[in-house]
Length: 245
Length: 245
DNA sequence: TTGAAATAATAGCATTACTATCAAATTAAA
DNA sequence: TTTAATTTGATAGTAATGCTATTATTTCAA
Image (cartoon, rainbow over all chains, first blue to last red; front, side):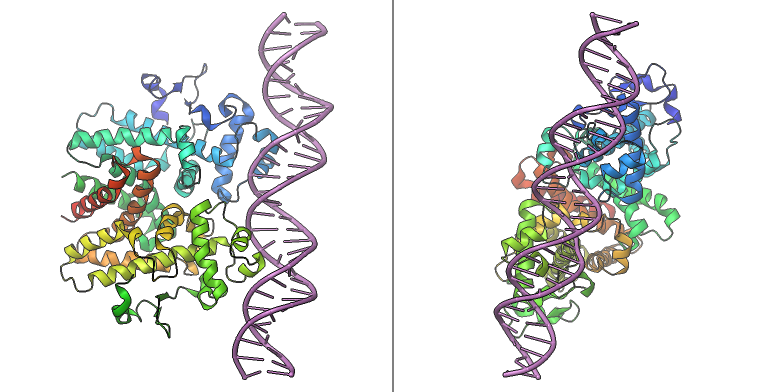
């Protein structure tokens, strides 16, 4: 996210970005309902978030517990429960963080691009390259976070409490992202009746096809794993521009 | 599935269908690795499967336990563990059951349709109407099973053990389904490079968009919930035929 | 009718997902 | 700079989960 270093204050208001006194990294403020105490406010909170990404990436969300995380960051279970109500909320927080940075990246890279088709093209490139961003200036390992998103994001809403969680605004970041990209779709073809469905499908497909390439290759069409990114981009382009022509 | 009553022996071999001595319902044989003891062989096993669908539908997979199911069917936890290694295997079994019947339905309704475009059209209709099938002749409540598939299917493969489970062949039914529909895609447009990705995306989208229509409507484009099915079909048609033109 | 197989009944165990209590350390306010 | 408030750590505890094991009882087939 080195790219943002000079320019991000432009978007600060819209993105709920806080520019810290000594701005060394980007701070994204997410819905307060996501946590009990804002983890970005304290050292322990920041370690909790940063290390949770690594741990979930390593052992998977099902195996992940606050106890294991506490051991890892040399704190206690009880302390961590003061930040997040439960591990599910933490997952929603992490995933929301990813959507927020993704939306930010999209805005940043497309804000001076007039042609909506070219915008969409850029968006698809960002979507399929989301796991490449330079993590050095960011408080989280974004590559690890992207893997977590690919593997676990669905679990953030596929629960008994979707409706309740939705009412609490837990999925706001994802909705915003979808709405913003859907607006580009509508610019390209105003009469197209399914812009939101298209965008949510493209977003989901970007992740799922990457997962398939890694684990269930017969559900996708990439021969060598390294070409996956290019193949997925090609596939998404075909879908998006196919629908819009 | 009344439709199958007369004709299904045609496909029996290919579909691993067993025609029971007194054929009152369809029997689908799934990968043996899915269970410890074939639940279709015993009364307890059949009740286990049938009631698990209802219970998962009611309380969700996370809240579902063998203990609760045992109470429900007036058996014991230990007895149920003799059929399935754990609740995850049971989920994979249920989901596989659904993919198998879906593939069967597709074959049945399209086997005398020569034009591949028309075939694809029918397939998309079946996909978006999957939850309507008459459950009376089938040992499972298919409408409930479809809801379970919509809500829980992703969890069958989004686990730490995907690769291991995949090696054991647990996802065979889904792969078969994808392969078969992908073949239709390739008939329509042989040079299209992503038939499998397209099909897995369409399958996933059919379920996800229904979920969104019910729980997160801003991620889709259906105004009233009742029109969801028609909208989803329209959307999938746009994607599929858009890509193939 | 005898033996094998399946089921029920019961118990037990390590782990999970928390909650509660209290003391110690840190930080902020007077 | 003492005091007060806040945050953390340490420890314990609890109900539920995800199993496994044991034994007794029923069923069913040879």
